[in-house]
Length: 242
Image (cartoon, rainbow, N blue to C red):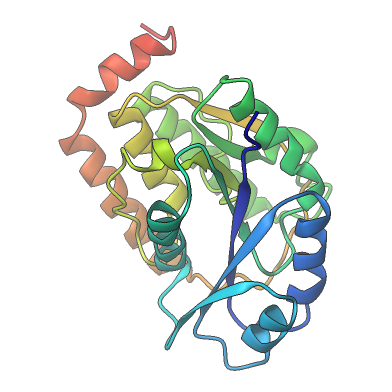
């Protein structure tokens, strides 16, 4: 039987302190890393290449959503349809030891797009600021209403999808922030099943996405959702919500 390959798009911006150990941990759980260096000015690329990892380099910082899109486009060109593609941030906030949960969901054909879910792990006790917690909960509620899917975490970018499913989606990803919301909406439109797996929260305070830029991205995403509303009724039925 053919062994399914598992890849991880590792989005990086000046992560020379974290990238080496993260790549080793990914390899330890059987994952093949693909680094997207989003305009780093430090040794991120050099360290990744010394680890034997393929690196795609942006000459300037394009944003987390753009880095995700770069990785997805590469995956669709180079990887087999049954390959699983994760998205992992290079700052260490996503724990590779959680990856088997994502793989198990897809391998058992329980869902098409898997998202890490942080809100059941008491994130306030683990360092998530109150504003981030409330804002995240509000966005989960809005996404649930729009898609009629029970969205447990709409802001976590620790995700997994098969390449064959990825080919069905239009990658209209905002460059900076709200990329997970856009992916959820695209999955709803294309009748792909969305599921959530609980993950351990490792909260990093140094977010590079400004609140105003994130708000602009969110408004763009949900405005498109209003335009595409008719597609979500069939998705809701598939999830038993209608």
